[in-house]
Length: 485
Image 1 (cartoon, rainbow, N blue to C red):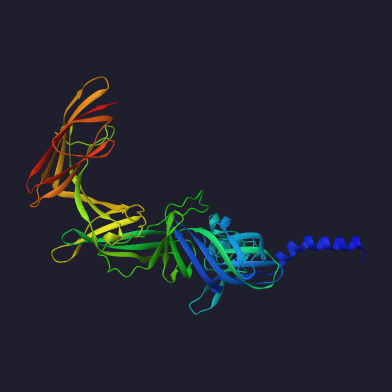
Image 2 (cartoon, rainbow, N blue to C red):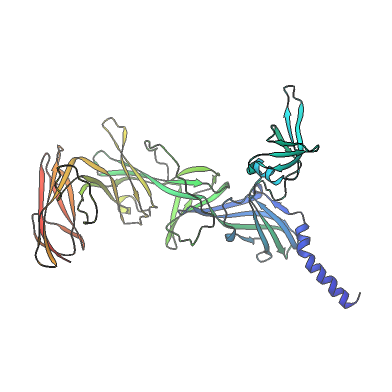
């Protein structure tokens, strides 16, 4: 064979290589061959899956079907590497196959092919009702079958039999790879990808002691898996923080588990260890767990007992002029009455028996009554809270303490300067004294002219009057300030 002929043969072999690979029976890797799974779940309803499997590969071109990936996988995020021989395996082509086998899909793919409708008699005899060519599937409005003698049968009844599973249908979501392999043998491989449809949130239960100066706090992780895959014996980590993503390829609506509010269970030992990671916080489960598809799982995040807490009532109804407020007949247009908000405050510090960075979540608060039964007294949502920050919970409105705010006088001093006189009355109908914070929002470039009580300046436009209101009594705060615009 001369040189030109050899070159031509070599060129033909190279050109035929992809088609030869395509003609191969693929090596099938199933979830049952998994050697280990690592799963990191984020607040944004997505997760990173890392799965290790052993895959036998021969040198050269290989076709591999990797079955059992998450149904909501982002195909652009998939990474494959060989742990046995790094650099010896490269992906030439990748296909994500998610057209799953189902009765509707089988009929849809069988249009133009022979189908058979059968029934089973009371005596157990198999009876063929209709056999012919399927002209229309249910998705087109109904089944149409043409028999061998030319009859057209509409929507026949019975069990349907098809000759074969149509090409392209798979039993579970799969990746089909064409791989170039430089070293033969069984490769321990790691496949990593991002999937949607899986997320987590934190839920907290706070039990207030009888004297209301201490609280027992338990934190729970609620993990919701709608990704279309089960992660068995997974090493689980949770990432807390606002991780930015440009676009979710397969957005999935987060579904919050519906749960009945009940008395909190006794707190077990925390199952997660936390660490600072980048500008976020990472919580790692001790041991492994199975996260099943279409499952909501709860695990203990933290337990803190005898935590110091303070309770105060806040009266804050002074809104900017553009906020519309409803009035009842007979009310003064410059008078606003309202109840006082109940606010619990606790310091997230080690000195206060806490100190773990708290992921964002809902806090449900309970307190025992005279018989010892825990009663639900309110809830609030907290943002991601670092160590040594204060957690503030607005859990409801006071029943027996009310406030009323009146604008007593307003004058225009000049074209740009105004003067406002405000009076706030707090009435306490309880049999015990109570501490109240009256919060006022001032306008523009302001100066206090006179005030009946001392106040604390919270920011450029907010002041706060701390008051002690006696049992069955009331306290009146009045002040006058000038402001420029």
